[in-house]
Length: 181
Image (cartoon, rainbow, N blue to C red):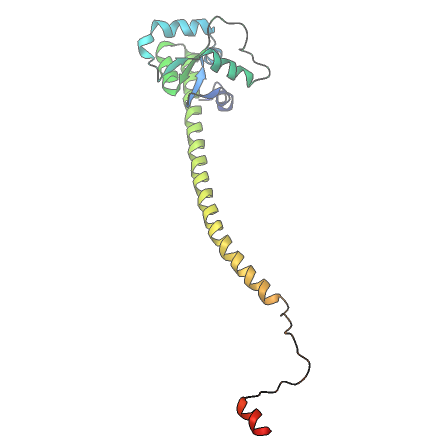
């Protein structure tokens, strides 16, 4: 079955707010092909299905911060209330209250986007871990390499000339001095 909406489009609508990956009610309404107020009304009629870890309403400050990240915002117009943010579980729950064919197809695409994002983050964490290990190894060897280069520089340096004294040096001892006279 061909995706109704490309995963890349959905990925751009997933935000990190309050340490959760979320989608906003205005974006979800657009994807589902309904007005934002219709989506919010459906959620309010089924509020028991949406605990705080599934959905929360943005504060004015969060909404202002989010709007400021976008130069041209299609959803930043005048509104009475701030949008709702739905976690992955909240989006999955939406499929139980929005039952149109389009809603089902969109939910499938959204779930795939969340899975892809999770896989990318997992790969990123693994890569970051491997990079940190490599940096530690390099730092350890970096010190060893510096010691080797210092030793090579010392070997390459011209030997310091010894101070030469003019004349002969005679070893004298008291016995020799006294006997020769």
